[in-house]
Length: 592
Image (cartoon, helix red, strand yellow):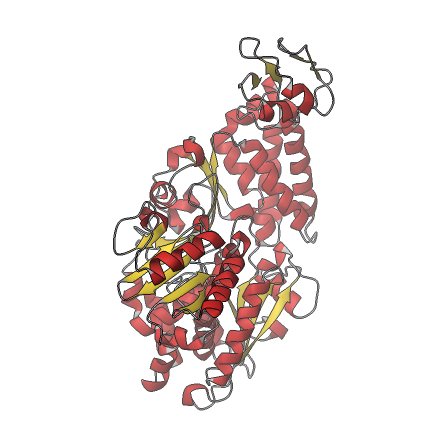
């Protein structure tokens, strides 16, 4: 039996970076030369910025290599696996010696992500070897009652990780209290926020944890059927979920009299969503499962009373369910020892945008925002100045640089005007225009509105028109006040969370970056030099060498001048495309 194991990360991020080619090359090499090592697969460990990742596990321990292409993979096999001489300069994570990227893991506590990157997600035995389905066995062996399970979840302090942060145990208690021969437990995997990939990575990397969490939830509330509502744009997640469901049925974790618990009959199926952002709202999600157009409905009644097919139902998101088996197996105190007084446990965040270490991190609630961005995220790309972070997706808001030391928990984040949301963090630097950021997110929510509410359908449209005018240099005095008035009306008059939170990016950018709005409107200038129609490109005569590259690149022939003489830009012809600015090798072209 091979003593050395070579593991390739095959999450979506790794595959996009070329991990399939690396895996196939290693497989061909192993078979051609009959090499004595085990080749295996796993998913994303969170280091998306270093993909493709290849791990070598031998008698000395584990070493994870980053940025591995086919040539590096062969080199790793030859030197490390066969020659027992690790290539230290390629290693990004190991316990054997310090690595430059070690800070990415310092401060992380992995509970929801405990198995991601450590198991083959398509092998139930590897999940079981790391404690998988032990929580379910504990319920059966110790004859724990549904009420005891619910109380454990309440005592843990687990709150819904999909948006509002409602206490999970209380939600389960409400669903249990409503009697019905049929009840449903639903997993909301309709992850639609731009820059968010927490749920996708969990489903791809540890699908059984989500299934076990749902099975425990079903036992607690008395559910008879489960549904995973997953967007069809996640084909790898759906593939691995289907494999996990088949394995769970085969091993008796789904079906009739589960784990010998008489009368506990439960199964799960997948409903693929068509990608409508509004279907992340639970009543719209249930309407979509029923084959209707995904549109929100009034509450009450709440899903715990009348949900899917008018039966009592409970909905939690992927990350929430992934925490449940850990809590039940290890006790409430194992979870609530992390976090703050009102925000317990850990939270998974997707770091994207202008950050050096883009990927997934899981930290205790209450971790300072500065630590997440600079210690784990490595700081801002090209060492530019941090400006803001958009937290909570289109429904969230922008947290500015002067609030970077807040603790990231439900209470402090909400106080800024943003929301925790599902955990997407889009980091912005000094080159980001905050007016355009507000326009971008409002454009998204306006297009994703189901159109049911007048204020959401028309109000967001009018707000978007104003924002577009401002970014194009046609803003007028009073536009800021109109935006604030419309935002409050949309927020207070919309039926569901999409409309109620759509104004957040606008309100927070006006609150913290009002001067940028005023510069766009009054001075017709974009302080970040980002809005194209407000830019002016000019050639510095002291730096221009007359190389003619800018003139060749200009698509409208707005640049004239003789070779080796100073060139000029005709502002009447210039379309502000920036090709000249990007092509100049002498920094002779400025933009203002």
